[in-house]
Amino acid sequence: MSTLSKHIEFDALQFSIIILNTQARIVYLNTSAQVLLRTPQSHAPEVPLTQWFEMDDTLTQIMQHIEHGSEDICKGVVRMIRQGDGSELEVPQPIYVALSAQRQADDVSERVYILECFELGAYEQVQQDSQWRAQVQSHQLLMRQLAHEIKNPLGGIRGATQLLQDELETEQPDLVEYTEMVLEQVDRLKNLVDQFLVPYRQGMAQAVALNIHEVCEKVCKLAQIEFADAIDWQRDYDVSVPQVRGVADYLQQLLLNLMQNAGQAVLREPTAHPKVILRTRIARNCLVNQVTYPMMLEISVIDNGPGVPDEIYDTLFLPMVTQREGGTGLGLSVAMQIAQQHGGTIEVHSRAGRTQMRVLLPIVPNT
Image (tube, rainbow, N blue to C red; front, side, top):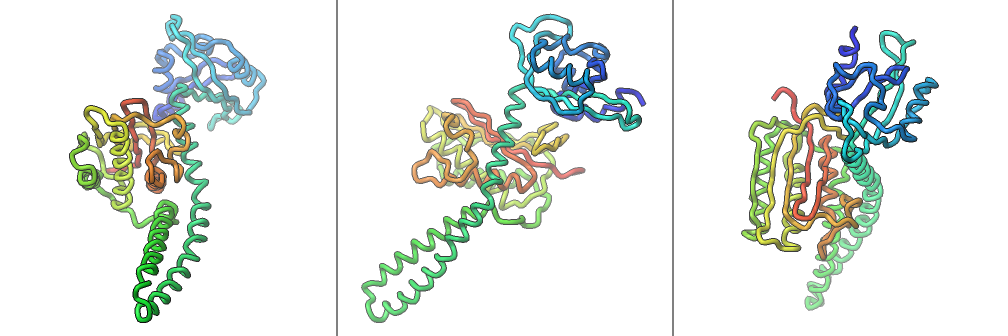
């Protein structure tokens, strides 16, 4: 089997793969690596890494790993200083790399080294997504336990208050308004607790194949009713996108939370033309939760508000994280959990004047 046919599966990956032999010379570049190094596969075999990368501490360690036949993983940041034609880059480009050894399937005595390369911005996005996912998951058990601890005494309080109200209605009706106030507040607290529990409930209703644009249209109408004419709501649909498998009510809640968040953001610091765009696209070669999908549905909510403040960016999807006075901070937390329940995630790309909440969901094959 040829070298190219052995490793052709790597071409589907969105990050760069460089395969090295035991002399630390290139055997194979996947498509992403060819773009990164500005070098076609035909020009790559037997070329050393120093053709592109500075011989710094990380690259030295990588070379030593290969020289000594180590099978340990080696990670770090290297600097790309040259293009494939040998010309110097004006600004060195930092690249995150991870080296691992692999035995050949058809000859276990033959070892090659796989160098995974991420442009630092892309790597940081993957790391941020993993951090957000871990944060949400770490809160699931705590939130379920806390909610149940609160709901148990609430049931007793409500029952006792109802009995007291029944007696007061006949003996002291002028005091009934106070028991009604207690019942109202107990119900309000129970509803709040239920909101906390929604994204953490075990399991999900039976998912079905659905047209995401039908969900998008419902969400747009709800957002327009809530914010009236204060915001320019725009749609930008790719009508060719395939169906997704999901629960319509959950996905509607996910997108509505993102739309409400965007609407509140553009009105918090009003611009001359507050605008929110709901956009659908096909996204290719997406890495989500350590799984690479050749194709996913991308639903973006884009606003022209002030952007996500640095102080809350890292904890954006945790409950109670909010800038809005009186807000619970549940909207984005619920949205992320629903996305995860559907096998997807939410990415955030934000700067002053443009924030994009990018939902990625697996599509239904063969539709």
